[in-house]
Image 1 (cartoon, rainbow, N blue to C red):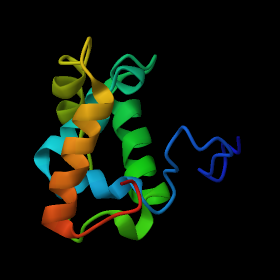
Image 2: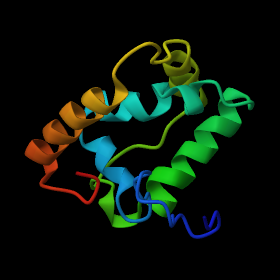
Image 3: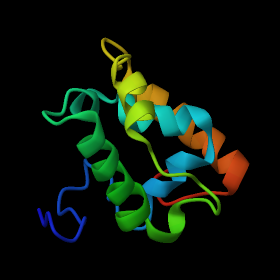
Image 4: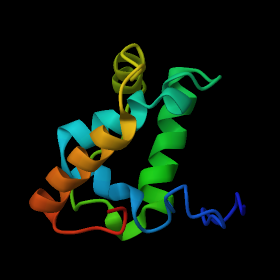
Length: 111
């Protein structure tokens, strides 16, 4: 795995580079990526997590983020991570959200 480039060798994990911004096409997608357990329970404060999420979706995601998408604020991250996705079928939820983002913004690389 190459941490610096956002590219993965394993195909079980979706590649983020040029794709992850797609989640910002809908409110559900925007919330989903912060509420994921590995994000919501990250060992960092809300300000730092907001900075990391902004790097991921706008830096690594690049042009996949919709025009005009706003950055995450520490307050938004704080509210979302208090509602982590637990005991849910995340793959099914992800597929539903990606279908919605595709309908709203066009097909993306994460599907």
